[in-house]
Image 1 (cartoon, helix red, strand yellow):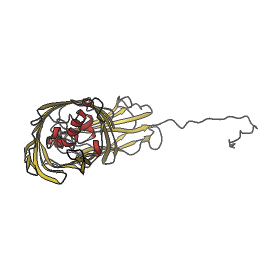
Image 2 (cartoon, rainbow, N blue to C red; image 1 turned 30 degrees about the vertical axis):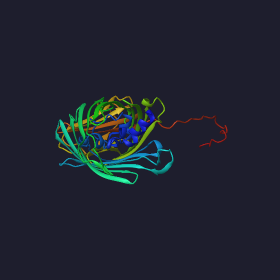
Image 3 (spheres, rainbow, N blue to C red; image 1 turned 180 degrees about the vertical axis):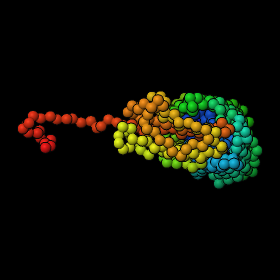
Length: 422
């Protein structure tokens, strides 16, 4: 019985309540964090949890997500966010769920036919910064539902808010399906229930550690839900995630590559349904995402290896790209060694230069040691919001290649494989 209820929860909605497929999780990142995403920002998946979350998105981003469901079903998501300079940010998304083939039998257990259950939601979202401390967003949804030979169209809307969106501590509140029209299959009307979500996010150590907490309730379910999540970045391009909710434990990871003008990444997530006591199979997610253009800062060194003591290639030229949404107050560029110790700082007020030169010396004018060096480029806008980029800068290599020197006595023949130089 438990297994049947969980299948109903994931495929048909919580015990048959319509619209519940919009309260699951659309991406691997959100899924592996226990779906504690209501106060999150700068991710297209926030369209699903809280439309206000896209107000802080700077680059354009598109996501493709897929999750296999029991009985051969599929759950998928495509999301896109487009920031603008003055009028706010726009988003669009497609959410779909297909149950796969389900066998229909009569009261005598004789097979009659196979049927499918298919639901789709189209999201159209707008969000903007109301003030430095407050973001608001709105989503309009067109919903389509098909069960066997019967289908219906409904409409719904969400509204959400983010408090202190640029702070280390953020709070989110959203009302999902605040206003909606019912489905009508055959002659019955199916009302889409209202869901209320509240969330909290704490971003510590300059965003390397995110702690998340969510609470939500659905009017027709008669039950409250909670979830926790933790996201950690051991290195800039790799994340590790765990989550915990009322019914399952989840975990996942993500990885991305920096390319000129863009980033491409992949996320994985999986969950164990402990409510079923091991009878229900683990569920998983995979998400591909791509960010590009928009408002951002970028760093491009002209070489990856250089030697400050050589006659050539002894200066590292660093190209800086800045596309800010608002007026820039100040900027800072930091060079760090592999241990995270700061070796060189460039900073000033106003717009950053398009190019910096580094001669391999620290702030005292002393040549740094051979090794790998990293950067952090930070631009602070007038309202206090920050654009940041960090990563590998270059390797300093002043030692020559390893080798051996052979000496021989006068008149002695060289060893085989070694030419004698006259």
